[in-house]
Length: 174
Image (tube, rainbow, N blue to C red; front, side, top):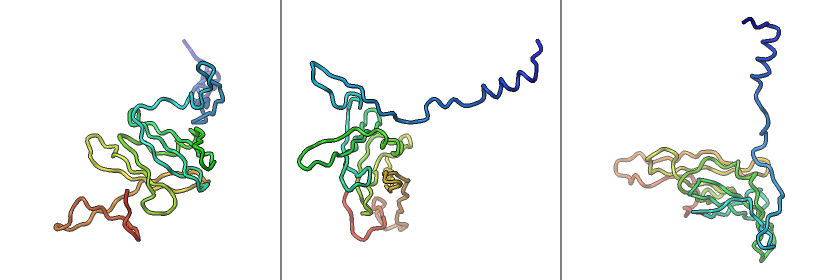
């Protein structure tokens, strides 16, 4: 069987072209859901099995938002604070979750270096490791993003190996 080169190469180029059907990580869907006539506010946010809650300013507006880390599935859910005083109102905002690094086992958010952006303390991604991993938070286009942070251990035989030294003017508490 002979394949003509003028036909083969255009077909090969067409088949090798990547599919761009899913160019957005999250797409907001406004589909109403209700049970017994009562509207469900976060019906499509997903269920929580073993959640840890932290507060962080996700959109750099000066208001603490809600970050939920579900340890059962290692899933991050982000909610923006509506900013109403005295009312607990949050809006599900999955577009902020894509800025988080891969997290496992546990995740706590604290601003330990007092730069105004929350940092993440989590378990190491290495299998069997008991180490802690830290991601330093920073703002880019008013969105909270993260970069890995390297701790410096003291090099001294008389020093306690469990002490962690980090640059700070004041000692911080987690």
